[in-house]
Length: 490
Image (cartoon, rainbow, N blue to C red; front, side):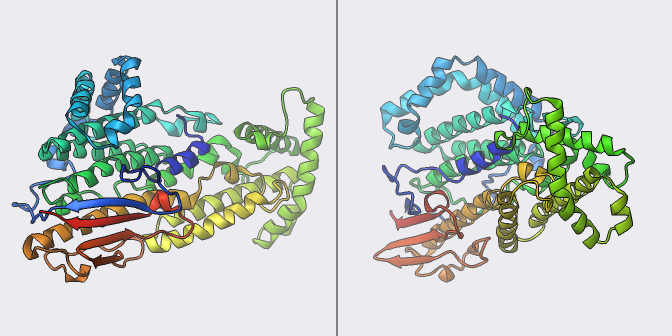
């Protein structure tokens, strides 16, 4: 796995949602239907007996990263045939109902992972996590081709934790299951300590894996109430703002001319060379943008670049003057420098548009993300070298803002819904029945949908309640929507 933007888009889709076993053939046009046969459960005593966050006072000095690497190395000592067995039984073990035979097979499979789990436990209880990748020192396209194999392997560790938690829930060892969930959520958080969107999205995917088992725990017979335990988790567990702020510097790391396009003194020939090299690098980022190749003669590459700059120059020049640059100064510049300055300004403008989305609360940020994405799509759909955007650096590097923002909000939205269900269980412990409305619950505050700041849709009919996570505009129902069908059982 590397930092390439194509993987960001792919991972956004991957971590959009997971299939529950309740539906053998899920309809992609309908939200997930999640059966919740719950038991009443009062607030624990003490109230914070359980916590899904490994708090600072529980952690010990040291860096978690080295122990995560040790866990990953130990995982690689397990034969491939052993992992193949996991893959072959993935659905049966993680989705289908469990019997004694399956449980025995799952526990037997888990035994060789003792060293891996031991190193992982050490990691999650360290006080901080610094992967120390020194990404600021990378130059050129190595910035986005930098490999991150530990991120792919971290998702494998999450699958192991999911299996471990499922065994513990099935055996009603709820305290052990909660501890396993704590490890998983800490792993998700620490993966996102690398200030990269790809790492953030892996953290979000790991969080989603653990939340599947949290949902299973909540509906397990006699499970403790997790209302306050969920509340202990940071919200959001993975904050993409830090990664987006860090990646704002990627264009200048890859194309250094963006830093000083308006101040450096270069000859027209030097500016021509810089932009020719930039175009070649852009071509490496996407086959669709391949403008030259190794067989193209130098004179033809130069001629092609001259033609493209000639087409870009008039509009770039016009816009710089409209933005307040001295017309005489613009006229004195070479054609290539004018296009370079326009490229630097438009690249910065696009990255600022994306980053400022993260500076707003969720409802406002999602609305702005829609506008930013529409703007970026408009820029990308236009012919590349017409001067209004300069060279297509931002178009090649920027992630889908709306996809990233939706990925970030997915966990808080589901946590709030599960907390609402736990509030229902707490109400039932006092009143012996499901509340007719969420407003009827007074024992604890019922969380609002963090996107709309309104209560989740909830209705009761014939001793069966339905609580829904509504879809946002353009979201795929199966990926994001959830319909919890809640029945109170003894």
